[in-house]
Image (cartoon, rainbow, N blue to C red; front, side, top):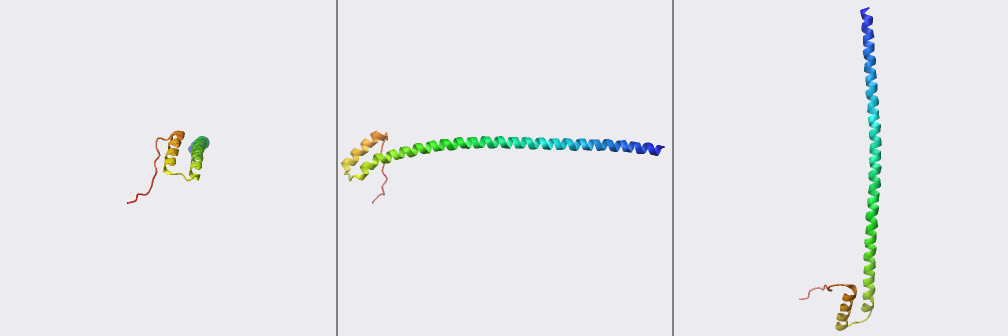
Length: 116
């Protein structure tokens, strides 16, 4: 009789342990699923914000480069007429002064190799 009571207690304990193990495994599985969803959301958000920021940076860079190219092209057109002629020193100095006023430069500096 005592033996059957002991077996019944063992079965009850084993069922309780089994239910606890199942509950633990289900909670771990739920935690893993929630973590995977959160990581997916975070990675998508970071990707979207990064591509948006990169697009803004590239757009600004493109605008700056276009502005520089237009400015340099206008400088080349200003110098083109003068360089096609064969100027002397006085006309070169006069042209540099007019170009300085037209383009808004403070001074012109020319680099040459030093001869000794």
